[in-house]
Length: 295
Image (cartoon, rainbow, N blue to C red):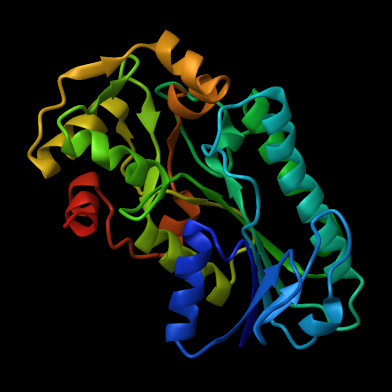
């Protein structure tokens, strides 16, 4: 099996490339610069894709997009988040659709932001899209895969929650504060937090690559928790107190719109399709997740 991956330098992409190569699979990495290695293929999210170098590829995994939490949400950065996902996906899918021998499967990433704020209500893949900037981005991001589906390519759309990893992402950025005893809940702490460990994220993507599923699939652990419960569990795992709380106004001042849609939003998302397909989570609950992640 030959697999091509966009976003291979990101947290998930690097781990997925490593896991697939450990299995002995051939992996090509789509890069936005001039290729510098035999395993690299040039693509421009706003231009052209070197599809000649993708002949014979069985699966494309599309992970590329500007980081949601990498910078404060200014109007300019929100536009970058949107364009990098929607235009990049549309460019890739049109290119794959035009190939004489296109890949049989496209795994094109999305996020649980699709559901907007769910409050205390649980949602799964059959739930409708929510409201807000991220919900709109995710809806249009997923719709941009239409050219691939219309060309007969099977499209799977993993809607990923917050990925927990020691080496990066939300947890990686928070660990120094918590280790210093300065960790605390965000806002009221009552908002639900849908998460998945990096190990399970990679395993789930591999499961999708090798399985028959199609359409949206939630990549979240089966036991979401509130921010307060997450804060307490992380402090306990690190043997540190978590007495503080960051007020909403401070989060909004520091993060802009990201505060309400990425930090204070409540999303209680269940992985119904993975569960029905008998996917085995290595870390189904937060205690086992933190035990597996932290040294």
